[in-house]
Image 1 (cartoon, rainbow, N blue to C red):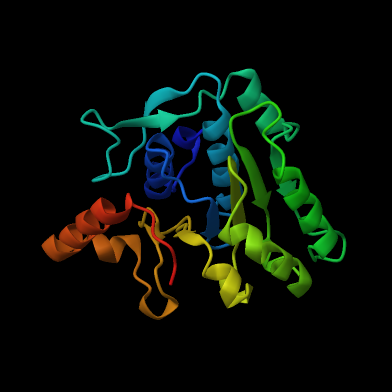
Image 2 (cartoon, rainbow, N blue to C red; image 1 turned 60 degrees about the vertical axis):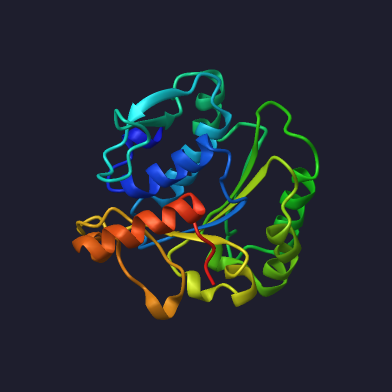
Length: 229
């Protein structure tokens, strides 16, 4: 499912689309937010965009964050062979890691994913590793991720999807840029958290001239995505 079809994540999707278009997408990301709001779907849409054979310009309804003068941003077509294979979960370069029957993600699962990223993409442009319910990562598995998150292999992107990011080790969180997804019932479109002690929603940031100025300045400095301190 391309970005344009994901509801309630326009701000986050726009940030990702713009960063991908500028080739400034951080290689290690955390998608955080309540359960069931579409975080994993957004991660898969990102994988489609990075590997789409026929990307298009599409309108993403994110006020104040237009991709260009027309409000269009780069998006996956959703129809090419690559997009369809990613949607079915059979694309060779999009790896999905999830908890097993015990509810935990073990170190062997993580090591296998890391080993596969050591090679060049087989059929796409970028290799994307989506770790779903990343709060299920056992401590040894998180430790195994640390060096890779800090220095991911070329052409690889790691996305940790979680509703409980604070369960992750501080050393893991510090190596990733964190994007928050809003609750379905909220009016916010998403935000980027820099520090857990100073959490501000997308709505709060959007109010008033100071909020708009802060947001514009931050985007100019870092292209819209910042690492969580």
